[in-house]
Amino acid sequence: MKFTRLGQNGPEVSKLSLGCMSFAGFYGPTDRDESFACLDAARDHGITFLDTAEMYGRGLSEQIIGDWQKDRGHRFHIATKGGIVIGGKRGENDNSEPYLRRSLEGSLTRLGVDKVALYYIHRRDWSIPIETVTETLEGFRREGLIGGFGYSEIAPSSLRRAATVAPVAAVQNEYSLWTRYPELGLIQACRELGTTFVPFSPLARGMFGEARLDPETFLEADFRRNQPRFTEPNFSYNATAIAAFRDFAHARGWTTSAAALAWILDQGDHLIPIPGTRSAAHLSEWAGACEIAFSEDDRAEIARLLPTGWAHGDRYSDAQVIGVERYC
Image: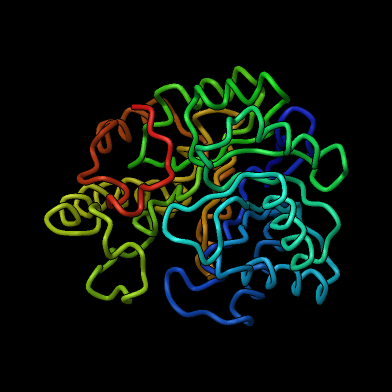
């Protein structure tokens, strides 16, 4: 495993993080033992950084991480998120100081820690200027409750506004071989400001796995069921393109997921992708991504197979995109 600094002044963390949303059953049922085994595998592969959120199972993901750390006597650097009103209507966010403080205190209790390495605003509350929210987060940092702070799903312009108040440690937006919009300013702004860029869903919600997905098998609760990229005819077009990339990766002795993550790492030293899984076996398929070094021929072939804008369909449905800051 390779390591990098989180933000300008944060700790050294692994270049691959583990996203823990699926511990709460977003992609299907899971249990404590499966999640514990996944965390064991993360530790054993040298991953030191976890990503979770208050809203993942209404604290369930955080609780599992806290229980695992207590049981195993091992500590990860942890990022968690708040600002979405739990139990509120869709798109209801609250970035006020009292609400964020309650959310953060609840996260710390479930995680069994007195400080997290990173605390994100999960979704913006548009009624409060981002400068004011940044003052709140900087206050939490000065109190010692968080090591640094960040934002999820924001635009480069918002990052620049926040950075006039205090250094922003990280921004987390979706980025992968099939979601490329952060290349239109956000990755560049992060580099300029010393902010770590954290791509979520770097494996395209399972599309860059070893086996072709079948949306017909998705459970009713699986939020991919209503995403345009997973509905026909878009899905078949997308699966065919990824099959060609899968053949490319296998011909070079790489797993599909490791090659997809290596492509992200190849975009800049300030990127830390957070592939999510609840499976120790799946984690082992991509844990070696840091060891892949692309040649110029590899880069050219990937660009030919999956050129910018190749994906069919939007990444979110109209209902799911609520709260995301669009900038292009």
